[in-house]
Length: 202
Image (cartoon, rainbow, N blue to C red; front, side, top):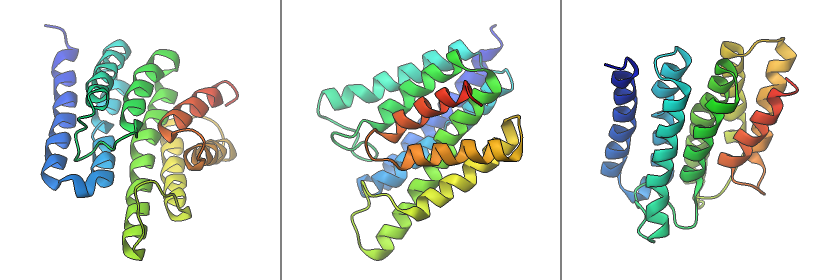
C-alpha cells in the first residue's frame, strides 16, 4: 500500500466535506462559502509540508479539482453556492496550487499556499462582514480592513515557515498583500505569480 494514499484521501475528504457544508449554507453566502473552501485545503498543505503527501500527488489532485470546478463554468451551470458567473477565482486558485509545489521548495511553497488559503480566506470574510454591515454589495469590493487582515495573517505565516530576518518576512507579506489588493489581475493568479517571483529575490 502506498503510504500517501490515506493522507491524500483524508485531505480530499476535508475539501469535499467543506463543499458539502457550504452547499447547505446556500448561494446567498457564496462569497463566504468560497473562503471556507479556501480554508479547507490547509490540512492538505500541512500534509504536503510534513512529507505525507508528495508534491506530484498534491499537484495532480489540485489540478483535478481545478478541472472539476472549471466544467460548470464552461457549461454555464455553476455551483451557485460558491461559484460566481464570470468569476474563475476558484479555478485559478486550484490551478495555481497545482503548480507551486512543483516549482518551489517545500517550506516556501507551504508558506505561499497557506497565504493563498488562510490570508485570502480571512481577508474575504473581514471584507464581507464590513460591507454587509454597511449595506454595500460585497461580491467584488475590496477594503483596507480586509487587506490589514491579509497582512497580519501573512506575516504570521512568514514567521512560521520562512527563513530570513524580520524585515524580509514583513516585506514578503506586504508585497503579497499588495498583489491581493490590486484590481488588474485576479488575486488567485496575482498572489501565486508574485509570490513565486519573490522566491528568486527572497
